[in-house]
Image 1: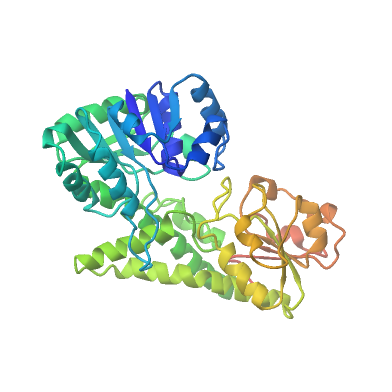
Image 2: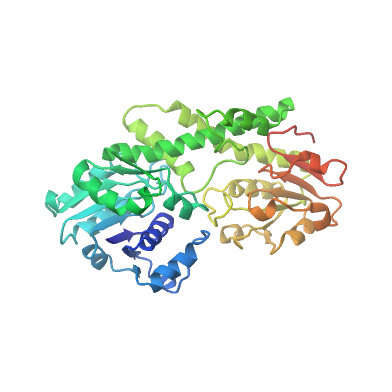
Length: 436
């Protein structure tokens, strides 16, 4: 099939490249000409394991075309995916749909034959209705169908998630005609076991938000239990194991740690509550999750200050600053909330990040970026394991550094406290007895 993806952000680029890898001809459109130029050179703007190789492979094979010419891409395609960003708007809650609607207008001007217009962006329920209205202003209803096809790609695991998804959600108000085309598109994935589920368009839009809100709830739930465990001398990992083996609950997203972050959970939980308020429905549970998560970074900061006792001029090194491992994404990372608070207390901040220097941290005077773990450990009074990169999981700290005053605060519980017994390095973690 000929496919068009409008937007080469995380969703559009990953999905477009992988559809091309299945043998389709894919037009990846972006109005950022510099980004398009770099993609043609095989330079990928995001870090995702394995993605760069797939971009080069399929571009060289002629299956993927990077372009800023939206009109041509739409006219040559059978299916057009809208995959532009939907960040939180100025009110701090709603999803900003300006980009989605602008793309819909551009598509409307270029419908030269029947096409499926598929919303891949995360959008609140009712967005598909608005997109349909925009298209109907200049086109007859038999020229298109508007579909919701939410993505469930985890950053750092996106290629695997695309190839072996738990489910493929298709939201349509014209189920027979649309589902046959979308099922044909996804057939190589369905054959591998992906569940193909067809629902009403509004239901598909809400499924995405509901999924993210539920996962955010699990993270917040285990983080709150971790606070209780620290006070009562219980190991949170025992609790996670005990409840996670219950098939009704499941073990995933039951790992205590920092506040959830990234491009999805913070904005999607807020957008869900805003949508509910429009229908005069109160989502008290989700509101509580948002509030608890927002206070999580303050709680962790207070623990850091407690460890330091006298924070002024203390050197704090962060192992990882992205919101999670295997990504270079800094959006809503808890490090961006903790670091400024520590700077205000007079702490000297440094970090080592596998994906390199982060420009967003350059605005803070004195923040240092180290190129290796050893130098960071030798420099620091307190080493904070912030992100669970594999290279942080098997460090022999005693051999790594001669720093006799080093302390470690493990926000990901990558190590066991017993491993530090009778050693000079003091070790603290999350959801375990916290004795300072």
